[in-house]
Length: 115
Image 1 (cartoon, rainbow, N blue to C red):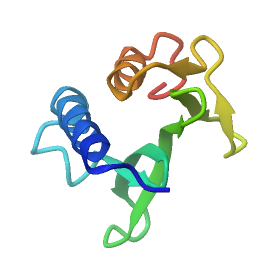
Image 2 (spheres, helix red, strand yellow):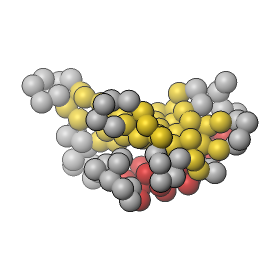
Image 3 (tube, helix red, strand yellow):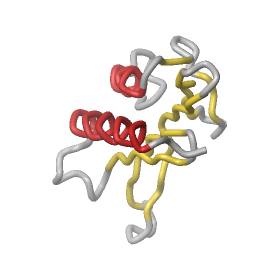
């Protein structure tokens, strides 16, 4: 089930605010950039950089994911561990809003998302 138009606009606004704060300067973006993608009921943050051997190709590294659970009306928060699997973000496994999710990722108090 996709998000309603209202929810999609709310996510878009929160995404823009997060990227405004967290995205690298324009001069650095060809070497390192951050993207936010919405798929189904999930919002995913991804680092994008050129492949070290073939700069014309890019490498995408998932950073964080929030999945909306309609029943509880909460966002479940995940981070990508070195085993390349999503794990619940234990200090704060859920957030009440998409804005709170982005605030938790931006603070990155445990160094799970951006190291």
